[in-house]
Amino acid sequence: MNIDLSRRGFLRLAGAGVAATSLGALGFGEAEAAEAAHVRAFKLATTTETRNTCPYCSVACGIIMYSKGDVKAGEKAELLHIEGDVDHPTNRGTLCPKGAALKDFVHAPTRLTQPRVRRPGSDRFEEISWDEALDGIARAIKDDRDENFIAKNDAGVTVNRWTTAGFLAASATTNETAWLTYKTVRSMGIVGFDNQARV
Ligand code: SF4
Image 1 (spheres, rainbow, N blue to C red):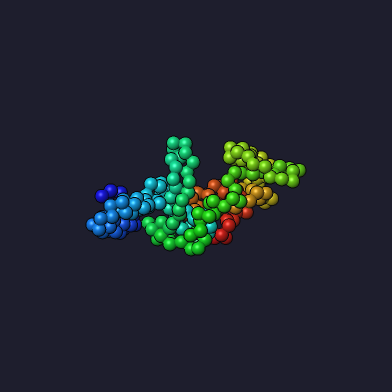
Image 2: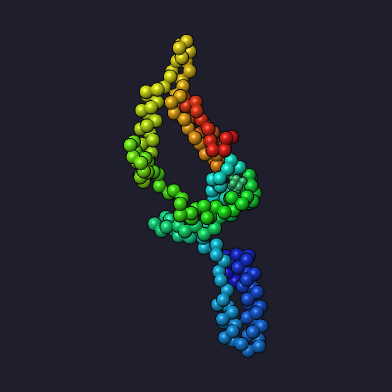
C-alpha cells in the first residue's frame, strides 16, 4: 500500500477494493479493473500547504491554503482549497462563514491584484507596478513629513507630531506585526492611526 495515501483516500480505495475483489471472485475480471480505475486520488494529495491569516476581521484566524503548481519552478500556483489551521491557537481549525468562503474571495473576478493610482486631474485609476507604488508612497511620506513635521509646540515643548498624514493598518495580523506597525507609525510622529477593525 502507498504509505502516502490519505485516510479518506484509503477508505475509498479499501471500499472499492472489497467490491472489486468480490466481483473478481464472481468471475467479473473486467469489472474489477474498471472499479479500481474509478477510484479518484484525494484532491489535496499532491498540493502545497501554505499557512496564512484570514484577512477579514481582527480575530485573525489561522488558515491553510492548498495549491497546485510549483511557484519556485516558475509555475503559477492554483489555489484549490482553504481550511482552518488546527494548530493555530486562535481558532483551532474553525472558521466562520466568511473565512470558510475565502477561496471564492481569492478567485473573485473583481479582486484587486495590482496597485492602482488616480493621478491628479485624472478621472480614472490606472494599474502600476508594486515598485512604482512603493516608491511613490515613500516619496509622498518623505515630502509631506519634511514639510509638516512639528518638533516643538508654541510653548517650546518637544511634541514630535506629524498631523497632516494618517495611517490605516490591517487587523488581520499577528501581535508581533501589529506591534511593529504601531512602533513604525508612532515613531514617524503620526497621530491619526486606526485600523479597519477599530481595535
Ligand atoms: S474566519 Fe471569521 S472570525 Fe476568523 S478571522 Fe476570518 S472573518 Fe474573522
